[in-house]
Amino acid sequence: FDAQALREKILDLAMRGKLVKQDPNDEPASVLLEKIKAEKAELVKEGKIKKSKALPEITDGEKPFDIPDSWEWVRLGNVALSINDGIHFKPNYVKNGIKFATAKNISSGKLDLSKTDYISKEDYDEFAKKVSPALGDLLLSKDGTIGAAAINESKEKFGLLSSIAVVKTNKEHVSNYYLSYGIKRSIIQQQIKKNIRGITYRHWNLKRINTTYIPLPPLSEQKRIAAKIAQLFALLRKVESSTQQYAKL
Image 1: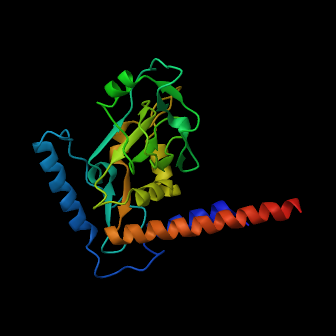
Image 2: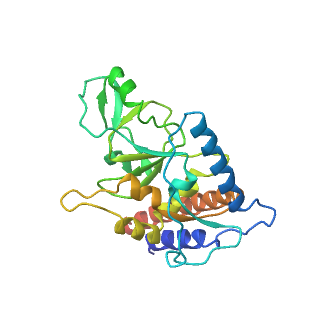
Image 3: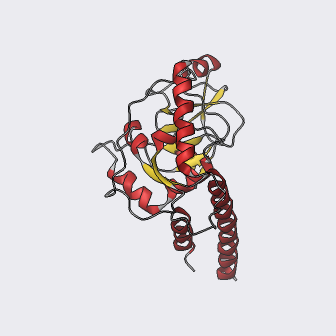
């Protein structure tokens, strides 16, 4: 029994549009992209986000496999409203205050804030001007275990080091759970490894994160895929636990 191989197979089927059925009534991903583009233009006009540089088109040579007609290959920077990282210097830690997360707090696809250092509220307020993780945001590890992804399911405030990038999207257009699973797919991880920079200090910079590309289904299908993956992964965890108990017996 190889649970990891099964997880990889599930993600592979999901990213190829073969895990759940397509619904011809779903609004195609191309329409979603137009809505996201219009929303970003309006937010730039209102001064809520900065105008970003146009990202290069995804060539046929870059696309590793075929996807359903209602899907689109997209770069993260084109589906996200913004992608920012935390502060680029070590803060002054305090004994009690607001939690401060680093890439070490992203583990096994989860954000774990049980073990963190603390910063003062004043420092947090200053750091939050650059980026402030909100409930449901997609978090990506830029250093350490590069390419690790997790959804922020914490309702408490916390600061960030630059080793974590925060991907903010409009949840009415994109499922961050789907994006999280997509980034865990091995073929996307291979793409990430090619984009890692540095020799002694290896990191995945914001420019490369923005240009990372994945297949994007219609929103309804994104949600169906994410729900199906979660269901199957939960079953796998039960099987793994039973297998370990059996081995002990």
